[in-house]
Image (cartoon, rainbow, N blue to C red; front, side, top):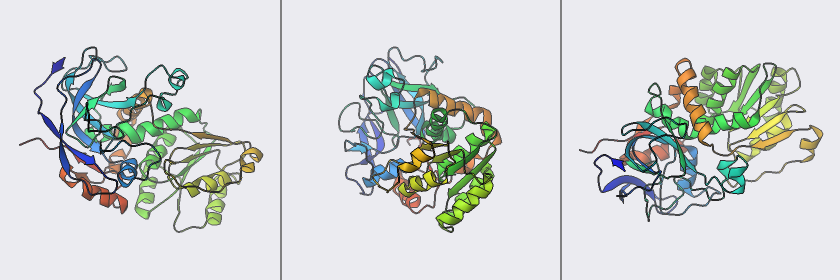
Length: 374
């Protein structure tokens, strides 16, 4: 094992009971690494809406409390287990390299063998695994994180800053996977995005670089909608200031009276799903990404049949999507306002303030900067 000098404990944000205010706690740093594992000193961790839902106990996914909050992070390698001297795309790794990493996939279950590692039956997810037992450090809001042997890892290009690399490890990789699952986009096609949060904004950027005919967005609040325009959206509709009928009329006008060929849902609001089915053009594709909560909504399934729709879902992302996200940032980042998504900087000591600000929609994508120990 190759290693730098390490402390005995890591300051980390631990959720012990859903909804309780959080402050940093001392969590053990493992002394031995398994073959294939890494230990990373976190440099930045951006805050995702899923982090808020987990903190509040609103997720439909299993959570093994107590857990370290956070799953969107980047860090410098400080210890390398045996056989972990390269990343998952065959780039060499040395101490000090920056990496982002995936949730685990076993590689041998039915879903892994069918090319769907995000559905792995033996999956371990950062932020969802207990920090009460080794290897302890399985969440991003921590000075150190343990990268499990079965986690894919990708070295971060020098041109990609920490805050955007962190963004690539969840928000952007989810968008990249959704577009990959969606399939080919044509220059003649109209695309509608539901939701103007980080995923929706990033989806605008990806769709515009793909060269579709137009991109419309339904979202809010007004500050987010202005950012949608900066990202290149052609039509922007405020969900709180328009009725469904008004939105339908505006979308038809923008799409030759037919409707969008592709709808992508990133809002997380269950009611968006029924509206998306109503708006989409016959023969269209509907990609659903934002629905991870427990909300329910009534739909008419005959709409799917009568319109001959393809309704798809996309969950999380695999190593390829993390790599694609970093490459997108490296190639297109300088020409896009992606840095504008980072709206506030916090420390481990002020994470609760960041949670409160995000729940009040005062932040889009805040980032936690790890402070060096004095």
